[in-house]
Length: 332
Image (cartoon, rainbow, N blue to C red; front, side, top):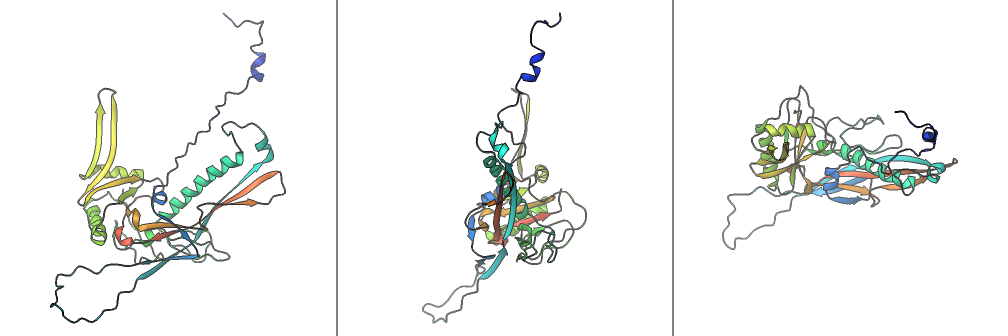
């Protein structure tokens, strides 16, 4: 039976409001476990500096005669380290017409929505940059920004040395050469093809971290999701791959790596460099923001009928004790 003809069903097609939901769904994951988990402080100079110190090794012959006269010994000097401020930015323009009309999913100002969105994007940029490990930053090319530090000039942006540039004491890799310093100016050289994660090398790395720190309270394993998956094959991994008979569901879950020094939480991070795993003590890192605020917003003057704003983050990474951390490169 056909549609009745004495109605306006067909004619109303152009008059019906579109079926557009009033919620905007963010399809991109937002997660910054490293820079959100480490301590935050304030930078007051372009060359942000901090001091590190270390304890003398324990002695087995520390014994003296009672009331023995002793001469004072001068204390050891502390180590002064520094990193440069890097500026990351986003800009946005919203026309007057865009603010006037009814917008699905944006109950307030369009500019406010855009600022929140770009703020998250900026934080992800900072997360990805601080976790780099390969490539020396060029001293003369503006577009070459890798893992080592560089002071900004009138023509070159400043670069904050990343995680891999500081790690020197505890490294494992498949081919290449170790990092040669822990001052933010060098990086490891990784050569050859990638190979499977080796538990002996991982345990050697953990041994080094333990010997140089002795505290695994806030130490975690961080890697990309693909590298975390390779941990499932290790005998020290607490995993669960079960079938729930009541729901017919297969449950696959990664909990912690049961190391020789206790359990270590495994943190997947989509901003990690590929084929790389870090052993990181969150307490031994810091991120310093210039001006006391994480994000600075500036109005951009314009002659058009649009509001424009600039978002900037002035930041640098502090490596307070690289000895309590480790890196494993070129793995699958």
